[in-house]
Amino acid sequence: MAARSLVWFRNDLRVSDHPALAAARARGEVVGVYCQCVEQWRQHGMADWRLSFQQRTLEALSQALRELGIPLLILQPGAFSGCAAALADLCQQHQLTHLDFIDEYPLNERRRDQQVVHVLGAQVEVSRHTADVVVQPGRLKTGEGRPYTVFTPFYRRWLQYRNEREPAAAVLPQAALPIPSTPIPRQLDGVPIDAGAQLWPAGEQAAQRALDDFVSARVAGYAERRDIPGVDGTSRLSAHLAVGAVSPAQCVRAAEQIAEGEGVETWVAEIAWRDFYRHIVAQFDRVSRGRAFRPPTDRLPWQDSSAPGWQAWCEGQTGYPLVDAGMRQLNQTGWMHNRLRMVTAMFLSKHLLIDWRLGEQYFMQRLVDGDFASNNGGWQWSAATGTDAAPYFRIFNPASQGQKFDPQGEFVTRWVPELKALPAKLLYKERRTWPAGIEYAAPVVEHGFARRRALDFFKANL
Image (cartoon, one colour):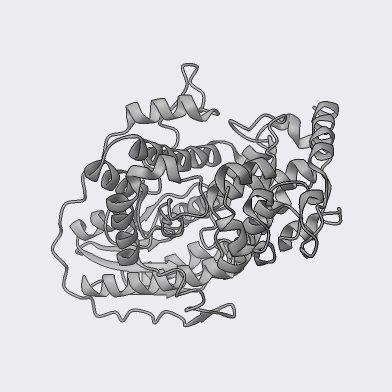
């Protein structure tokens, strides 16, 4: 019987730079499949913003595959534990001989894939591919043969090791199989597919346009502008990367082909950070189990969500303008500027001493670009519990951060409009310098006190 392959799409919703799809097409006829595991996704904290964006990207993928003569079938196993049986039934139903998929690295995803390989291995030939990272986890080791746990030496080795992969060889479309594609649901778990569509255009073509726009117009100035939340200085590709509408290798190639200099180098380093956190997730299971990467910090007696300041932090009412602007941006758009992710995370964990895991979960439940490895890595860095962590004595002063990165208050007053009447020179000053009549939340904690308390907290428990 001629080869007939099943390509299992997950967070790789594209047709270009897709080694699993390329291998299957070179082999013969192809069927695509996508498992909607809504129950599992919700357990992982997937945001409505992300769910809707993912559905729109899936819709675009279905159309792109249809143009290649490849049907896309949608399965509804609910949880990861149901994927193996559902895929086995599909292979038997359509007489499929091969299964191809791209590896993912969080613990539950790896367990799911192990179960699929175990169940289907006797029935079909299974091929696993790498494309969610530039360098496959496990490839880079220290001189002692251990995984890297600090970014800088990892990055040096990453740069040495990396060889840009050539694009997959062109393959002529196969004749369309007599299998109809499954219509993409217009609503999933109560979330309309078009929720957030104006803010977040989805699909591989939208991702490519965003990439082209960034590398042609903004990457050269990325090093100087990436930390300024009030300007359009970042790529805005994180949501596309999270669902795999574009690959990290495509991002690196595009930047290096069009420009060179500090901006490109800085952005490539950010792609390497994304790889780094995936390498950590793949090689240290405890971070997927809600544990701190650094075991000694597991015993820190964090406050819970009943602590003063939690609700104010969630609502952007802490009384610190830059923190509140970042939280309101997140709540209203499903996205937050990266500099502010660090500022707000450090505020929760070090000013308020509230468990970083609560903040990690809150972000995942709201981010359009929600991604476990990057989100977990960023939160643990900020809370001084993770790899290459910010030392516990590094405690961002929200006022100083505002003065440095939004000195005129353009970003802050966009999201905290009650401060528009306040002169920029007073925006980050003590309240006693403000004119009367400014109605804005009182600070939930005084910075100097919070800093001393955090230092005592870490010293006493580490």
